[in-house]
Image 1 (cartoon, helix red, strand yellow):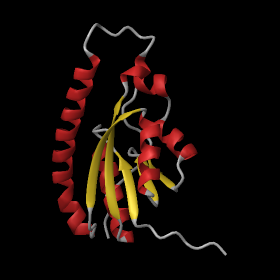
Image 2 (cartoon, rainbow, N blue to C red):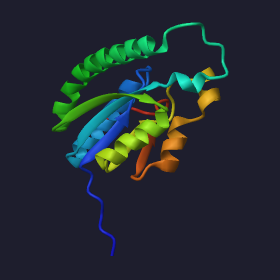
Image 3 (cartoon, rainbow, N blue to C red):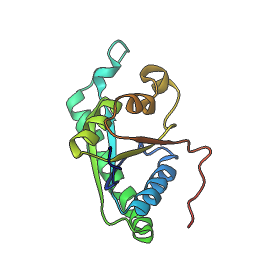
Length: 162
């Protein structure tokens, strides 16, 4: 007989788009219901993925380092805003990590390494050229994650209330 999986660790990728706060709030609500901890992650897209496109002459390692630093600063302020909601909904621990590489691969690798019980992520983030070039990150994560993935369409999402 299979045992029911207890949700103790939730991973939530964000991209700092307008939808990120809605997705993070949904994750806080769900994690609070389970008494789980949350890991918010942001992945800086690897510049190698842009090979074949014209990229002006620049020193890529410095640019990637600057992007990582900027993302870490943005994550800190994002977490500070979210801590109030975490306390309200009973989330005991919230951690964060900024990674670099292929977005979907990094999300799955991080969740696998953490032995996450659940990934909660949005179905829509940034759009346009990035979506055309890289496809749906949510689709790739759903297909390759080793744990359940809950996807949330932020355009139909509402605020959570008890």
